[in-house]
Image 1 (tube, rainbow, N blue to C red):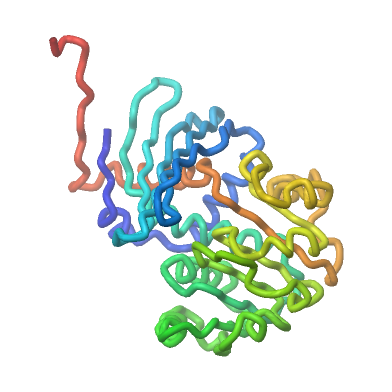
Image 2: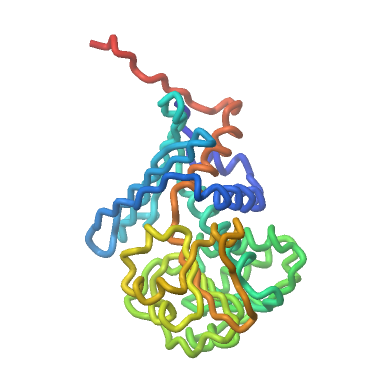
Length: 316
């Protein structure tokens, strides 16, 4: 078993386009995966411990991802991945899941954008400007290196200034025109793509009529947009079983499908530039396991990798 920690993954300097390509392949393979619904243990102050097993037998991949949120902890979100060789039943690696989670989530969001946004989108609105938003824009810059867009930022404390500096550090930063908006309504109005990386909203953030025709809404952490479930033209998800508990599931079920079905040509994605579409990628572990296995292969020959041999049955 290998121990692959946060620093080792950072030192690999994996380009954002690799995360996007790995996620894209995992989405194609989704219908071949075994994905039990995540087990979620609730913790006080809106915390949780999520446990997510997954299996992709044709790639000999199985494992478990855990994600926890403790509001008083730094970092608030933390994640680990156990990666198994399914055929042999051996544990290949214990891997820090934080970089993988952030980059995977960003890659999935940009995959949804590439798949379901109208082709001539000109603006992206961002709500929540932490690590997850940075990962998402980093993947966007890698997938669309020559795309000129307006990036609209929700002004909160000084986060929008810090995020602007981050955008300016990206390759091809001259492609981006940056705007600040003091309200959710002004941010969302006239935006072609809206990405929310806020982990918690108590209520919907604004009335659905502020979302223009043809927009694509990607709520990374799912909260704050339940009115859009009902009012939008189409709803796409990464896995139906993972969102059956959503409050409005029965309302949007007739207009819902999985992103993987679009990719595999089993259903239509966007059919017009007037459709308002919302995408709930709640997070499925097969994406993380697919990336974790690629990280594992890159780490095999690193000198600092720590190997731990399992005990045999002669220890007593």
